[in-house]
Structures are given as C-alpha cells and as structure tokens.
Amino acid sequence: MKKAIKLELAEALHMAQAAVRKAEEIGVRESVCIVDEGGHPLALQRMDGGRITGPQIAWNKAFTASGHKRSTHLFTRAPDGPALPGNEAFGIQLSFEGRFAAFVGGYPIVVNGEVIGGIGLSGGNGEQDTQCGVAGLQALRELLEPQGYDVLVQADIKK
Image 1 (cartoon, rainbow, N blue to C red):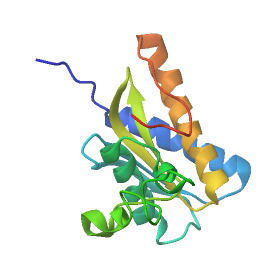
Image 2 (image 1 turned 90 degrees about the vertical axis):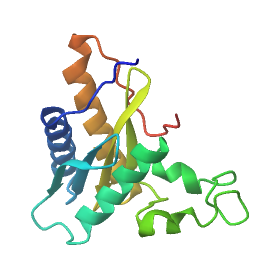
Image 3 (image 1 turned 30 degrees about the vertical axis):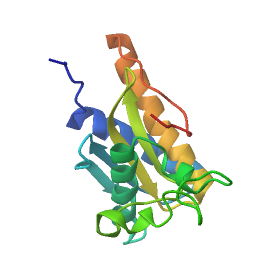
C-alpha cells in the first residue's frame, strides 16, 4: 500500500492567487486552473477582463500537464517534441475530445517526486504564462516546505 499526497482546495487557491498576483505585476489578464491528479479542477479563476476562452484553455493545459506528467510546451519543442510532425505522438492534440494541450502554459505539480496535479494558464504569451505558472509552483513550495514537502519549481518538467 502506498500513501498518496493529495492536493486540496486551500493549496490550489494559494497557487492560483500567487499566479494572479504575478499576472497583475506583469500586466496580463490570465485565467488560471489548478487540477488534481485526475485532471479535475480544484480552482479556476479568470481575471477581470480576461478572455472568455481562457478558463477552458487553462483547464486543458492543467489537465494535460497532470495527466501526461510533463510541461505542455515540451510536446512541441523542436527537434524532439513528440507531438511535432513526423514524431511518435503527432496528432496527440486530438486526444481526449480535443482537451489535450500541446503548447506552452501547463505544468505538472510535483511534490516529493510525485505528480499530484497540474497548473494551467491562458491569457498571456508563452513567457508570461510561464512566469505566472512558476509563481504558482513557488507559492506551493513556500507553503509546503516548512511541513517537510519538496515541491519542484521549474518550467521544464517531465516525470
């Protein structure tokens, strides 16, 4: 039997709020979604004035990052991105009824070496989405580190 670490609402909201603060700091209107290990939303926020398409895109990115245990942009990073034409996962974006996101803005949440969820962002360019996503991961690290948990904080994650 294995004990599992579960992401809960309080942590998800803490992450989302940190991502929104970063978005405000850099002047972008983001949608942020935090999902559990099954890709189900725990927190979903769209900043005032954010695109109406943002929440769904953010959820798709978080779903993909959690479920496939890698940052979404790694699917299309040249030359070896598995979703690039001619590579082994070309067309994967059509999976899960089109919910599979293979572009920047989705990051797995890794605690003690295990993927326990994902964070997805939509509204900025790739660099802005990344800054906000990393801010959310950093906030989780700061929250959980005193309790003895190790949270991975980086943009390029593949587990």
